[in-house]
Image 1 (cartoon, one colour):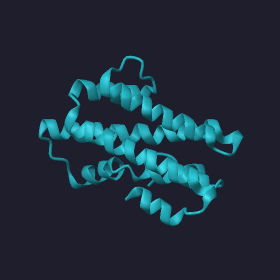
Image 2: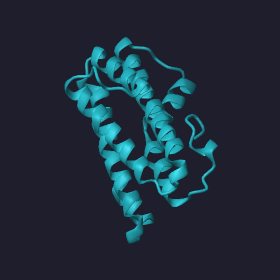
Image 3: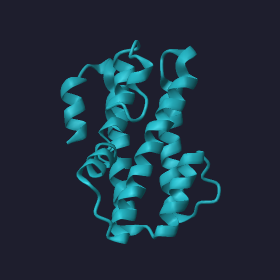
Image 4: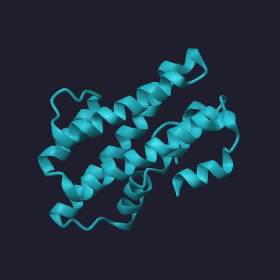
Length: 159
């Protein structure tokens, strides 16, 4: 669905980078979210979440290592492809920040599930707006469509 949606609005040949970014991110979101929801132990998930926050996956193993390495590869290569050379460093930081926020939201939901915590509607919506991970698809892609996107539009928590 994500690839179809982005293909419908970014169908020109020069927009292929946008389609690639969204497709790769959508696959990663599916795998990582399922890992948080069903496969990962709380220890693995805490280690993965901390590794994403530090952006250092050296001590990870198994599926956590694969997820982090794939994420790092996606973010690094996407930032390197960004056409405004002077903005690549800032783009890399911003892109990492939205993924950090997403992984934290998945960890929050996992903690709620494991402990039986029933969040308030406000807590649920605040976390859910991030954990759905639409911003990890739309915001990086929008940078390739609109070079003048204001920095504050890309910062976590401003959706």
